[in-house]
Length: 164
Image 1 (cartoon, one colour):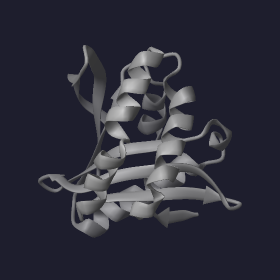
Image 2 (spheres, rainbow, N blue to C red; image 1 turned 60 degrees about the vertical axis):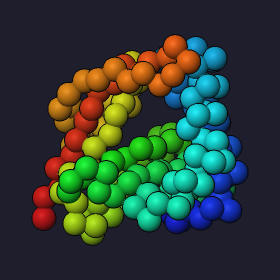
Image 3 (spheres, rainbow, N blue to C red; image 1 turned 90 degrees about the vertical axis):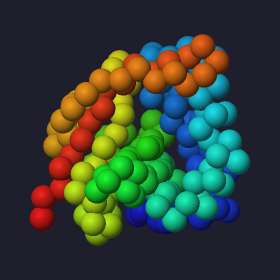
């Protein structure tokens, strides 16, 4: 089940981020960088700012009354473009088809918003790239982002074009 998150769900999002990042980035990033990024991207103040932005949406993914993941996306991040900022699942959720359902949900919400394009970034060493490609996303560019504290993210930029 996909449930709209509200500000009181910040701690659930933070816990899911910590848990999912352990497996998602364990072989890609050093533990120090993971800790830095979690603190930067999932601090209470950062998440509150997202909830105050009407274009920024968070949804929790639940199965059997257990939260297994979350998605965060932003309508109109660029003209006619929704940006998928976050899609993470705990290790136990993998292989259940929840990622596909979550992406389909985001594609539908993107279309409802009037946006024509859905974008995301994925680390070049992240196996999720092949999952996104299997869901119709294509690489349109590459970029290195300086995220501070001496860390960078070397990413593929991917897009999905919404067809009516």
